[in-house]
Every structure is written in C-alpha cells, then in structure tokens.
Amino acid sequence: MTAQAASRPRLLQAMVDAFRQEDVRKKLLFTLAMLVVFRFVAHVPVPNVDRTALEDAFKGNAILDFLSIFSGGALQNLSVAALGVYPYITASIIMQILTPLVPSLRNLQEEGEQGRRRIQLYTHWLAVPMAFVQGYGQILFINGQSGDVIRDFGFQNDFLGTLATLFTLSAGTMFLVWIGELITEHGIGNGVSVIIFGGIVARIPSLIPNISTASIIGIVAIAFFALALTFLIVYFQEATRRVPVQYARSAFRGGKMYRQQGQSHIPLRVNMAGMIPLIFAFSIMILPATVATYFTNSGGFVEAVANFFVDNFQGGRGGTGTGPYWIVLFILVIVFTFFYTMVQYQQQQMAKTLQRQGAFIPGIRPGPPTEAYLMRVVTRITWGGAFFLGFVAILPFFIGLITDVRALTISSTGFLIVVAVVLDTMKQLEAQLLMRNYEGFIR
Image (cartoon, rainbow, N blue to C red):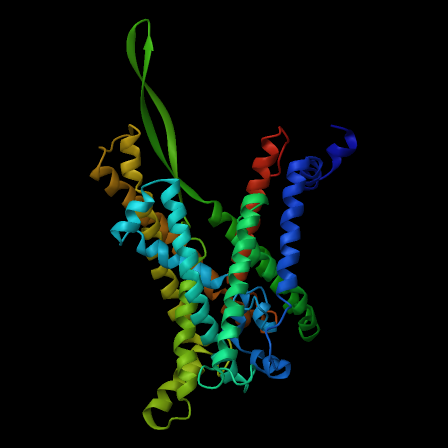
C-alpha cells in the first residue's frame, strides 16, 4: 500500500477498495440506482389529490408524521408509494407470530429453505389485503384532518374511483417490496430496511428550514443528543451475551476412535427484538387518539373521554403527547420487547439444535435443562434491551423539555432504523472486502 493510501482514513480507504472491485462496485451502484427509482416513485401522486388540503392535514400531526417515516415521506405527497413497505412489515410480524402457533406453518419452518420460501410467499399474499385496509383507513383519516384531500373518496361515494386508488396504493407497496428484494439479492444490505433508510434520510433536508427558528444552544444540544443516541444504539445493537458451548467430536486415528472437545459460543443479542417493539408500541398508542378524534363533538361523557385521549395522547390534536402518553409508551415498549424476543427465541429452538449437533453447555444437561438455562439468560439480558428501547422511545420528550426545541425533535424510531441499517450494511460490505483480502473498516 502506498504512503498516500496509508494516510487516508480507514473508512475512506475501505470505500476506495470497495469501488476498485468490479462486483462490489456493481452491488453498490445497483443499490443506489434502486434508491433513485424509489425516490422517483415517491413523487408520483395518486389522482384527484388536493395539494393544499394535504399540506394542511400534515401540519403538526404526530400520527401522520410517524406513518410517513415508513413511507419515506411518500405519504406527505400521497404518492403511489404512500403506504411504503409498512403493510409488508405488518404482514411479516403477523406471520412471525403465527408460525409457532399454527402447526402447518411450524412444520413449513422446519422443512428448511423450501419451507421458508413458502412462508415468504404467504407473507406477500397477506401484504396485499393489509395494503388495501391500511390504504383505505389512512386516506379516510387524512380526509378527516383537512376536508377532502382525495375528492369523493369512499365506496359509497365513488366505488370505482376508490377501488382504483386502493389498487394503485397496493401496487406501489408491492413494487417497493420487489425493489427491496432486488437490493437484498443483487445489492448491499437488507432491501426493505434500505428502502426505509432511504426514505428517512431523504426527509432530512426538509428539517433545515426549522433551524432558523431555533437558538444556537438548542441546536448544539440537539447535536449532542444525536451523537449520544448514536453511541447508545451502536453499543446496544452490538451487545451480546456469549454462552460457552462445547462440541463432542469423534475422529479415527491408527484404527481407533478418539473423542475430541471443540469449544465455541452462542452469541445471544441483548436487543434481539430490534425495532419491532417500537413499531408495535407506537401503532397501539396512535389508535386511541385516532378513534377519539371522531367523538370530540358527541357531547356528554363520551366527548369528555375523547378529549382526554386527544389532549394527552395526541398533544392537543396533533402534538407530541403529554406525560401519560410517554409513560404508557415506555411500558408498552418494554412489554412488546419481551413478547417479540420470546417469539423469536422459541422459533430458533436453540436447545434442540445443540442436542442434534452433539453440543452442550458446560455444567448443564442437554434437553430441558439447557432450554431452561437459555431461557433464564435471554430473560435477564432482555431487560437491558427493553429499557434501552423504552429510553429511545421517550427520548424526544426529554429533548423537548431540556432544549425546548420542538421543531427539531429527533424521531428516535427513525434514528434507530438509520443507525441499525448503516451497521448492517457496513457489516455486509466488510464481509465482501474480507473475502478479497482487503482490510475493512470494522475492527
């Protein structure tokens, strides 16, 4: 390596090495090209959209802002990709929950790659009706915020027009899923996650005008919180509990059989659930306030209850929520973290896999004792992951209290997605470089 190349930062040098390799360069360029296609589709609106009413609907509405994260900002344009990949994510979550509960799905999972492909096909089929339902509900909700954003929407008003709009939105979702799978197969990174990542990053320039309304101290505080949050996300995403494992091996030497012991470990992730608990919790939290908006003028006790949910769980018709909102959100994130972690752990069947491979944990008998031991370890380390995700969920509340900069409040869920996708993509690029004997950028 030349002295000039040695003086470059390791990350920059790794990127240069990556572009020097033709196949890696093709993967990177293909990924970038697919992101360009995604951003183009995100700006193609569905017919009969009132732009002025659409802008009014999004002003200060936390629910629509959250939903817009997973559409990459396409929901703000009400484009053909307005639903993003969220219906597919919802279908994937449902299938992951149903797989250990439904015997036929459980049997498919145990069949190996062919069974997993069949489950993936079922997930695609389920995503289509989910897109229909979500598209219909979201457009009705947007119309309720600011008049008729899409004129005459509803099966009772314009059956064919409404059906055409829903078909368009569903086709846009499945097109993004297809692009994501192309990225996974021919590009770098997990395709669906990269699509969400591209949408979040594309929204960053829209935050620049808000800087003029904030003080220098507030901007510095936001930058500090962003750096601290990035460090915490990287730390907890990479944190693992290594459980030692020994493998009993047999070998023939001189006509005799000898038993050898090989040592390894099981890396149990502290945050095994990823970002799914945040999606679950936010989805549950926006439901009461959304329903309550339809009863704020009903009068009597019903109106009082509706106003309570709107004022406390939506911050007064579209804000960021008050104390009760964040407390309940924190609790829900912890509950869903444990729930989803246990679902994933049960699907992995670690104890049975170890027993089939002739492996064991030192001091623990194979079978049910190993299952019980691993369950205790997973439960203990999940507390750390659960409190971390809960902290990430409620961080915007504390940032708003400390800095009083509401316009620049960080979307912690979006931040977690961005950092997690960057880490995953860097690891895959690192693996590509190490296969070609290059020094990567992760030590």
